[in-house]
Length: 230
Length: 230
Image (spheres, rainbow over the protein chains, first blue to last red):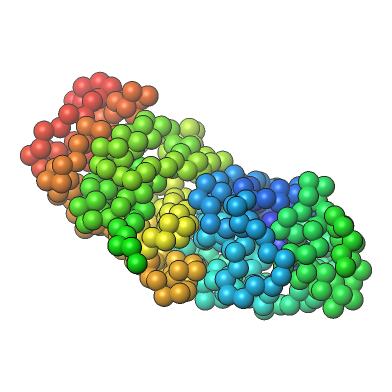
């Protein structure tokens, strides 16, 4: 039997978190198959960023799966009639996309099965995204249980594992970890409404978390903004 | 407060089973939002059938969600290099599409959340499709658990229910039930490799199950075949 490198499917958005996740999976020795989604998000600069990150962080391949979530509406990230907020919200934010992580993990699951991979990595985080139900550990655990009942491999006893290495880390810790692993954060885009050139708005939730993270981590921040923040 | 009819999302393939499910949901008083998938299946005649069935069985609306599962390959239904078998298989069949029901239910979940519906109907069946892991009751139960942890509505205590009214029925029972509810089975296509006109091959697993079902149910079968079977 060939000694085959273990394959993993990495959900790669092009943001800071998933770039770090890819670096972690690589450093753990996985052959990384990166998966991004074109889901009608306003910020398509994310997808350009994902391609750059996949190349720089050594993914074996990078695929973009087209998913017309905007067809249903219901989120500020896909529905242009809902404004992206400029301040921290309480409860479940309007930037929450219905069932997004479930859909993305399900498609990752399909690809993993075809690749004979039993490892999926996702950059969910319960610290900064506590308002998103599908970013919690109990959700991920239940997805794993379901996935192992859903698939041929699961039924045959090859357990699937959904890795969430960022789950309990704050933004500054993520940035420090990624920096140690050689992540080039200049390639990433976090902003919910970045322009076509990948420049960030500087005012949305995601921008504020990112900027604060670099400051706390004591890491130089080269994020490009549309207008200089503050 | 308005007395609003309860909405349900119905997974509608255009086949015999899901047409029956739609009739059951309608007869239970649900306003039915039918959802089909263009997932690179060989038999696109299914989608024409789904549109006919949605119209004839009184769905409020019918949407087709495009999903490029063929991108990953791995199934006889989406990968033209894998032949559709002409006899009953043992174990998990090659017509199994990796994670298909999980992906479809996840997208139905997103739409349900936007519609403020807490009811999804799917025509899975553990009798005739015992080889498909994602057609078993324990799989559906675990999907429900996961879905209620994944979504805003679930977190707010509005439990989602995945209805599987055909789970324990044989094909003849399904046909009898649908016939009582007025389903026009001539509008449906079951064949895994129907031609563009919707004519069935008569030899695949799905064709054989369907023909046998009509015989056992004692219901006239007007299925059109490419060549007369036997």
